[in-house]
Each structure stands twice: as structure tokens, then as C-alpha cells.
Image (cartoon, rainbow, N blue to C red):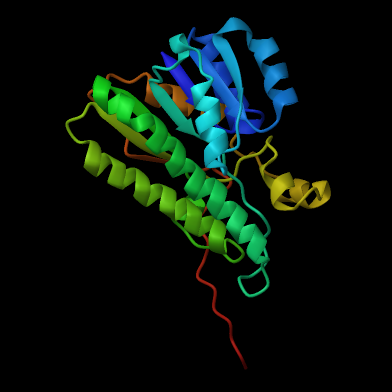
Length: 249
């Protein structure tokens, strides 16, 4: 099996690469940070192929895909993992540039990658697209504004893929995790404020990148007649937000 992972230089992506390689599969590890990709490739050996690419840049995607060796081009599993959250400010205070970056990465990059690799899967009559969503795409919370909206897009896009792909043999899954620790997610969200990032996980046992990787591996290795539409995961320490009521007395 050939697996293509976006955002593979850290976090979920790197852990997914380790899991698939451990089980003997070829993995294209793509991302923007060449040094990290090279280090991961050195760790994983010949079954990992580093590919420097920015999903927010269509030319970068096309150039990277054109450089894939022939023996790596028949991608069986595309994991659209590249994504990010920026800030927790309310909508009327959030920087527009942050919103644009999240949309470019979480939505535009994901659909561009999918459109690039999907036709060959349909032509072969097999394949799997796993999109990394979030519980933020299902449940709103203060400060989630555009991040949550991009993940709702991921959820609906995945369901619509399923509608289009019926009978083709190609599968599509939205994996929507909740609170996850041990990655750069919150450090990126708080723009390098490590103390603020650490506070998110204080006193909790969150999900881990290994939990996500094992779940993706399970989805990818199910019999080909089974499609997992959506998986929503939360640590047991996390629940659903209560309704907020602002009272003026």
C-alpha cells in the first residue's frame, strides 16, 4: 500500500507515517519543513519518501507530485492531515489574515490535494481519502469561529465525496478528534506562547498522536467493502459545551 500524508513533518502526520511504515507500507511524507521531513525519512528508512510541498500553493503541489518516482505514484491512501488553528479571539477581533490562512490550508489545500489524486483512484477502482476534521466542525465554541467553520467544511466535503464515489470502489472518511496533546497544534494556535498552549492540557489526559495514527491505520486496513463515514473521538475528560446565556440584571 502507498500512503500519501500531508503535514507529515510533525504531530499526527509524523506519527501516522511511523505507524504505516512499521506495518510495511510505503509512505510519502509531505510538508513544508525539509529538515524535519529529512530527519523523519532517516528515522523510517526506505519505506518513507520525503516530499517538500505547501498545500496552500497549487504550483507547489503540482511540482511536488510531478517529482514522485513512478513506483510511488499509485497512491492507495491520501491522508489530508495538513491543517491548523490560529487564535481564539472572538470574530469581531480576530485578524482577517488568520482566517485566510486557515481557509487556505484547511479547505483549499485539502480539496486541491484530493482533486489531484482522486481521478487515478477512481480509474483503478480503489483508494481511500482520509480527511482530518475536528469536533470543532460539529460543535461551536467561543473563539472557534473560522477554525470550526473550516472543519465543518471538511465534514460536509467528505460526505459529498461519498455521494459522488458510490460504486467506484473509492472510500472517504472524516476523522474528527477532540482534545489532543503532544503536538504543535496549540503552540501554533497561540503563536508560540508555550505557557498558554500548556494550559490547554493542564490536569487532563488528552488524546495522543498515536491514538489518531492507530485509528487511521484501522480505517485504512479494513476490508474494501467497508466505508467509515465519520469517526468522532474525544478523551474521557472532555464533554460538550453548555449553552451560554449572557444575563443583564
